[in-house]
Length: 170
Image 1: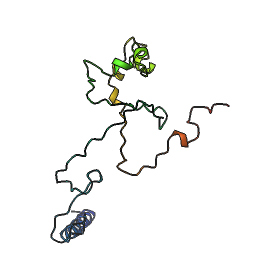
Image 2 (image 1 turned 30 degrees about the vertical axis):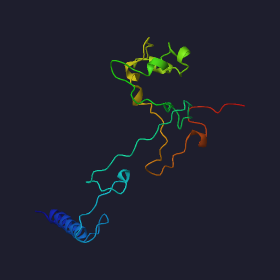
Image 3 (image 1 turned 90 degrees about the vertical axis):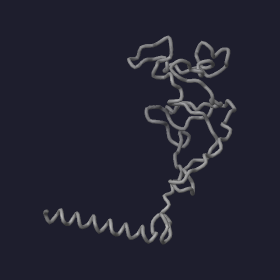
Image 4 (image 1 turned 45 degrees about the horizontal axis):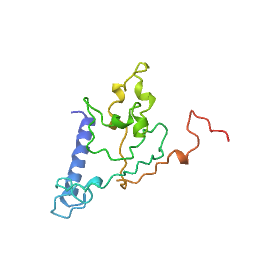
């Protein structure tokens, strides 16, 4: 064994001993002497990771059909109504009952974007592209919930004109 290898092995052993002593003394994760350390995850609240939690009660999603402003350039629109129970699979897409271009005059829903009718080679299709068929890959329903972590994101309204776009002239 080379001198360098012995030094690395010795440093690792010393670090392991120090960590073991810290855990045994209860100095990690808020555990007291002789107690098992409790690993806590911010999304679970004060419930330790190995313990079983009760999921939070589901609130009422926003269901006011008001279009929300987008937070960033090219953000997919947020769904302003409930979608629980909607079938969206390879056999059927419930969203298209209202949002298909052929049905929006009757439903008064926002039609699916023209970009959803273009395949990956740029060819215009009669039906929605299979790449855009599963709406919930990009679009999510609104829900009035508090964020799990602090967020300092600044949306489009707080920034100068997005890159690649000119500011409209008055």
